[in-house]
Length: 341
Ligand code: AHG
Ligand code: MN
Ligand code: MN
Image (cartoon, rainbow, N blue to C red; front, side):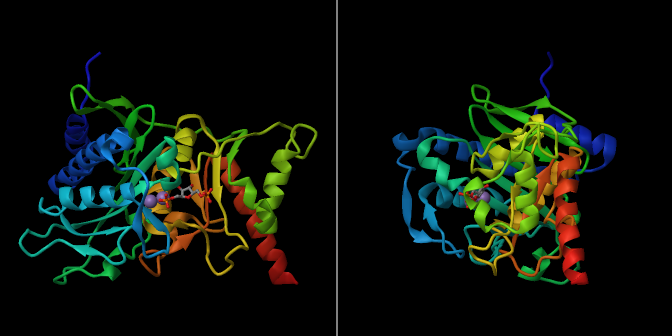
């Protein structure tokens, strides 16, 4: 079998579809290289002294793990000098990181969750890196946080790297979803799956069930109906999975279908959700839609949401299309009833 490398894939996408200008190709290759570097640190684990917490918190008040910080730095160092970026934003940085003056400024903006699934690092369960690429619109000099506040439908590319039994890079440039597997001996990314399709129907859901009592009624209704199994209104038995690394849960859904939800809950009613819109929900929504699935916040398409701030949170429902449509319909019904009352 002839092996197609990430570079060849990107060159051919540009040649055939004109989708990947030089700066974007460099950006994707640099992110992929940084992910190799992170994969090595993840694999070393205790031997590399990378496990455990750092003595710091991020802007969202979460205790940072050593690997959160290491991965963030790897991504900055890999990306700031190439001339393809204007600025970066990350879960682990309070504000944006503008490319220093000593380097040329490019036209792209990179957003990322350097290490997703932090609670799984120390227990050797799959984790990942999520990224989203926007174009800096407008020709004003300099770059500010406002430049990042664009709806997700404007993403030029998005992807994640999963550090699991295999290390894989999953990518979309708006022309379907491709998977590359890291060949460690060669140090290269090899195309192993293309044109991924998420089945429209599923019998598997992913949600943190321990929060059930805090959910809004439409979310409870949906899960109650699944749990009722074949004698219930859905007439079939459902299975459940929850890795607690969004990357791993989304990857399973991409490969075999399913629906993922991290809904609003009443533990912290002022927060729209737990996950972050710009570097978790948007890139995953772009990938899922490109694979024929759907992604909403329970009411609206994620990719149409206009972000108000860099670290904005959002409810997330994504995966197999018909289940996402059902959950969204339950939420909209409730909204319509509330409006009548
Ligand atoms: P992060 O490690 O980047 O903060 O993200 C963790 C997220 C996401 O990966 C996962 O789906 C969710 O948190 C798990 O949350 P619970 O521990 O509440 O189940
Ligand atoms: Mn995350
Ligand atoms: Mn993270």
